[in-house]
Length: 264
Image (cartoon, rainbow, N blue to C red; front, side, top):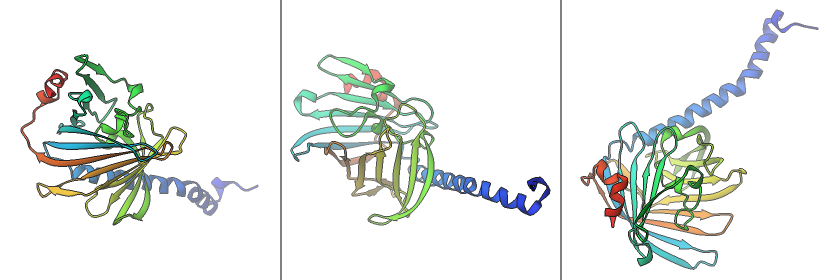
């Protein structure tokens, strides 16, 4: 019987066999993180923005329900973004608003304002994987996708409408509705073009496709459309964005719980 400790060449070979996959995994994690950080860095500094939205819900038969909303977003230094979505139509949803305070570390804070009850309801961590207002977007999808919220693994290159980096993102939050996500970033501008979402059983649940990108202030790319398909139910939701405005004079007071009732 030979001893590895007494046989340098065999010891080296054994070390390489054990460490090779580990090094490769570390490289994939580092490269995946680098892509996520680059995408995040390219969006830093926008300050605040507003946009108009149309939400179209499609059932399995292709029948649709349309809703209109307004969005406000505030960039927060050293933390996640704050955002407010306010429904304008249909009439029975008018004034309904959701406020999200995203955090880089820990649970995000979300509140839903119901004008019929004049009540602000806090959304619990266990409810954030649920559907937002009957759409195929979950409450957790509405939060800004901060780098620290995931562990990463670079999967390789692919081509959609253009050459992309493929990166796996595994949520750090154990209460996330997703076991993992696979994201496609274009190689030139690091814009998010597609995300595949896998449920807690690691089965493909949804796909979001982002298209119609335009650049604002010579730096900040925003899509005209986000299209979410639920592969398990056959339902789909389209978000159409228009009238983007940047540096619109918003402040932290516009993103307080007390401001939700004034959003109407």
